[in-house]
Image (cartoon, rainbow, N blue to C red):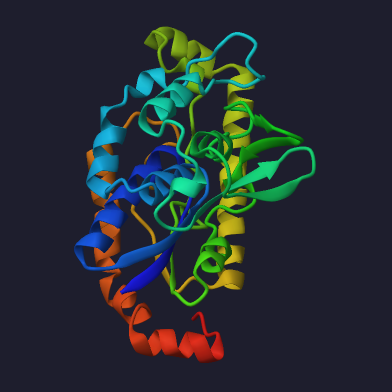
Length: 293
C-alpha cells in the first residue's frame, strides 16, 4: 500500500508525526515520498534519510530540549537562537544532502525578500531544516545565497500539493497539527521566560510587550489555521490525520514518547480511510480521472 505523506508544522506537537509513521509502517503502508513544513519538514528529512520511526523517536527524546535554542554572538535578531539545534543536526545528520535520501523528499520555506514560497530539495539537510523551522521573530532566518529563509508553514502549513508532485500517482496522506477553527488559540509564553524564577515570570507576564507578543502569536495561529483549511479545499488530500495535540504549545518541553503515541492513535483511527485510499481501485480512479477526493 503505497502513499505519499505531507507533514504539517506545529513545533513540539510535531513529535506526533513519529507515531503516525510508526503506525503506517506497522500496518504495511509504504511511504514512497514525503514533504513537510517546519517541524514536519524536520521529521520528513530524518525519515527520508533512512531513520526508522523508532530511531527518530529515540533521537528526538534523547536531546536536551533546554539547550536547543541557545544564541550565539552576532546571530541575526530573534528571541531565541538555533545554535543548539544546528549542533544537534550536525551530530545526527552530519553532511547528508538530499541526494543521499532513500525516497523523494522536499521541505518548505518562505523568502522574506521576495515573499515567495520556496521548495527546498537540494543541498544539505541541515540547512533545509534550519530554514523550514525558523519561526519568524522567534528564531533567526537562514541566509542562503540571495534568500532570507523563514518557516515554510507561514504560507504552506501542510504541503499537500508538494507531496503529490513528488509521487503524482499516489494518494496523499496529510497530517495536520492545527487546532480546528472555532476553538480559541492557545497562549504561548515568551520562550525567554522559561528558565526564570516564578515570581519574575509572573511580573514580566504582565508587561505590555509580553501581552502584545501573546496577541501576535494567537493571531498568527488563527491565520495559520485558516490557510490550512483553504489549502485543503484546493489541494484535496486523500486522507487527513489530526492528532489530538491542541493543548501542546509550540515550544513546550514534552515527552516525545507521549506525543508520538497521540499521532499513532490518530492514524489508527483513520485506518479504514487509509486502506481505501491506497487500494488499487482508488489508484486506478486517480490515474484515469485525477480524482483526489
